[in-house]
Length: 417
Image (tube, rainbow, N blue to C red; front, top):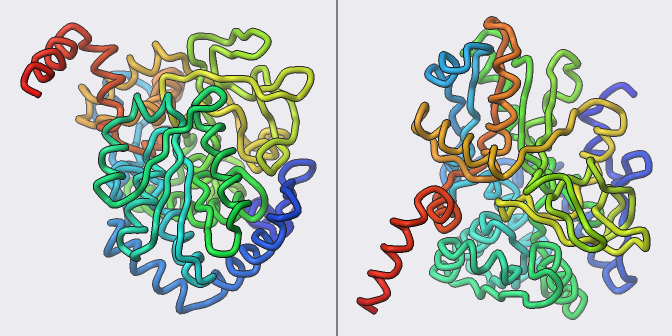
């Protein structure tokens, strides 16, 4: 194969045995229309100029690549850099594909946008672009995530979105996806489903990788400018895989650059019949078909999807994008996991050494970087993808790291209501 970069964006949506489009017949016309619209758009110079203009003037690109001098000295190994997508408008990488997809939706004449969200960053970004372009917006969110990501729920509602807590199943991200798909089936003509990661039926994995790939292109030019060389290693957290594919894509053909995807190890790699204490698909998952695509899933022997766990709502997903699965199968990327306890320690270390409050999803990548940097040479370099900032996790981190004072604060506030 001449170029992995090209293959990962191929218009068939198949990546060896992974990917595809496994949807009800009622959704085939929608997927066909979306396929045509997307590939027409990315060949349209006017569309690309508008996309670039919005990236610069609305999202705030390029985001910085920051040399972590204090963390580098503290760990005593490789030179450590952070690609800080948390400085995007709305606080995460999700705005990248939301801008791209809403432009495609407008080309298709759609007036109503629906989306799913776990950590809330995709929902927030979707609500933001819908507000900017005057589109109706409905966000589906598992009740578990709705409760633990209240700041993002509040902001989505202020932007005019209707946020629907999903009460069925495990009340998590995959349940929100299922409800969103049913909504789309009920009205595939006027509704556009703005899916939030590199999962789902074709063309979503290809489309979101394309819109997120700006991250890796910026890292390449920033590393060449700052370090005069490419990084030796890039580490990203991996739920569905949008932030990982975004930073990995431009380096897929650079064999000397190691690419590491970090899954959620949760409470440990243990599981029961229908419940996992983690969300590490490559540790205990198997190949299956769910939610419109073929990939690795946490599932029981009957193919029923298991409930998963992560301290971070954005990584608490039982499946992984088909391109990630393919790249793992051919050995181009390495996968590992970080435990909840390691994530909290990494969150605090990055904050105290570099003044960066990372999202808990991103702190998974930080946790792995702490382990690897120590073992690398001082002339080598490592890039951590900080895919989002940590304000959204206030009710989780405060409860875990400052529980007594936080509970006291909440109790005092309730007296004034």
